[in-house]
Length: 79
Image (cartoon, rainbow, N blue to C red; front, side, top):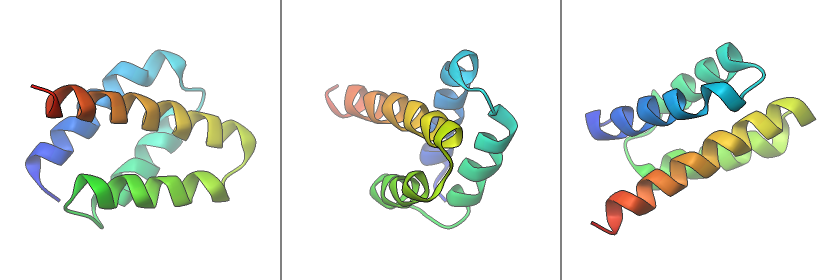
């Protein structure tokens, strides 16, 4: 895991806390994925697969995180 990826994830988690119903679960899931990957694209790919496998509430929480994460990555890439 790269420090820049970890920074992006942590900053995104801070942004989405008010919108997530199961924040501890989301943090655990996200941190588990972070331990497996080094690249942003890998992270997004695994997260999308996790979204497909989870219950409706958790799926929504992960989708919220993913949307904010992709927006943050896009903003950084456009600079």
